[in-house]
Amino acid sequence: MPFSTKSSRNSSKHTSMESIPDNLSQDNQTQEEDVKIYLTVTEMQELFNKSTGNDNISETLKNPLGKFMIQMQNSHNKLIEAGKVDGEKISIADLSKAFQENLSITNENLKTAMEKSAATVKDDLYKRDLLYHTHNPLIKCPDKFSPHPTLTSISRQIESNKLFPQGRQKFSGGSNPPITEWIYSMNAGQIKLNLSEEEFKDKLLQATTGEVHSLIRSLIQEEDSIGGIYHKLLTMYDFTIKPEKAKTELLNYKIPRSSNLHKGQCRIIELSSAAARIFPEGNMRKQFSNIEACTALIRALPHASSTLVNNAYSKMLTVTAENGTTPLFTDLISFINPYHESINDDIRRNGKVYLLPSVRPYRNFRDTPYPNEQFYNFTNYKPGNKF
Image (tube, rainbow, N blue to C red; front, side, top):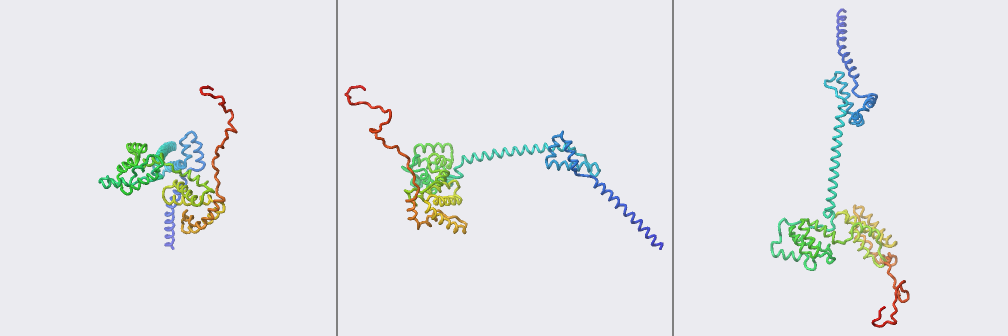
């Protein structure tokens, strides 16, 4: 029994000794929880009211990042006051001033970067306008030249004279030959001979005459590129219909009553190909040209023939859609070939009638003279008389 009492006392003493650290830790935890490290709504409102005289603090509080930094500054200062950390307090005025200065520098850098970017874009657009011939040319200039001269033998020189335009085929700025045919001959000769760039420029001079020869000579002296020379020549001497105008004419085109299906198809191909030049060479240009040509043919025909071709085109679209392709205009022409005669008959009867410009009617001067017209009496005329 005494043993048990002693044990009980020891146990009670041990329990009371162990409970002391727990009470201390709870007190410390309570004190830590009492330290508010975040601003309450009321404190934030008071800070707003007090900061009316300080623009830096007001602007910082309006910024989400600035507001968060002030919360951190407040937490830091309260921890120092509670003795939880060592260090110096941070002034809210100094923090706000530093934040606004940094923000001002960031905005200035952003403004400078934007101005530089705008200037770069403007410069790129300007250069793109100057080098339009390299982005979407009507006719591509040769892009492969030999790094060394190739006309080093008599046989090569004779061969070059046969391949490049000579005599009446020289280009002088007129329509015979057209500039597109002349450029095609120049490109074909370059593909076969692969001349150096200087040799090709010499051939340009030899294949031209008159004002065109003088122009090219000046451009070569100014060290203009082959692409630049081509672009200037096409700008000055090419009268091929422009894509925008071709698109407009294609939308309004109707096959005349005096024409036929074959001529109408040729005109549509010409206009659709010209309109498709708004796209670079490739699949996009091909698809646009064919779609525009097919729909233009449907619009250009009289009502009965238009319905027939439209039904045929719809069937072709259904078939080609499974393969992920679009019908070609030549396929549509072949598809409606059995109805060729009936379509031509419909065009002769119901095709578009284009009125010719009005011509000034013939006047019978004896019957209807112009008003205020003077007539002289030659009845008593004798040589030497004055009237």
